[in-house]
Image 1 (cartoon, rainbow, N blue to C red):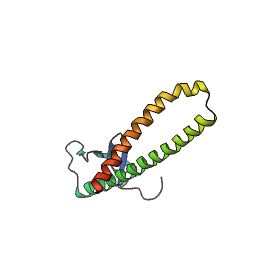
Image 2 (image 1 turned 90 degrees about the vertical axis):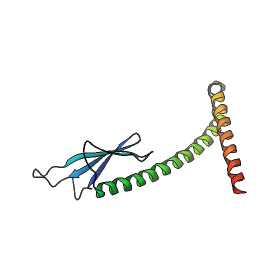
Image 3 (image 1 turned 180 degrees about the horizontal axis):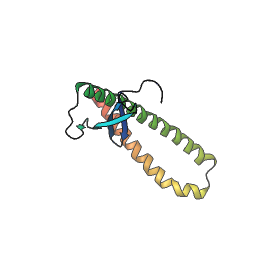
Image 4 (image 1 turned 90 degrees about the horizontal axis):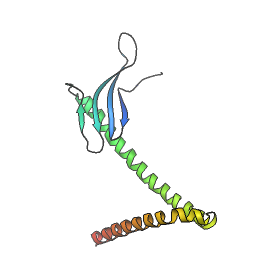
Length: 134
């Protein structure tokens, strides 16, 4: 491994991460990772490991990581939605130009129900925004 390593390593989990303090200043000159906490990005919980007390530096690093992670996840959500728009366009093109009657029979009901549900949600949310704007 090269150069300077960060002071903390965050092993991503489903709703957050396990937080490790990285130590390279030991007598064996090995990289050691000491788990100091588990964090939940969704609700902001930070649980120190064992009887450990987190230092102000630990808490700051964890809070900064959680803010960055939340921002990254929000950007990914929007990107996923925009990809869905692309997939819907590709699906329309496929249905119009390539799909066999059997393929259309297999997917039409599921697509129509999904699109109806999505349209209902979007129309309701847009109406709510318009009413709040007045």
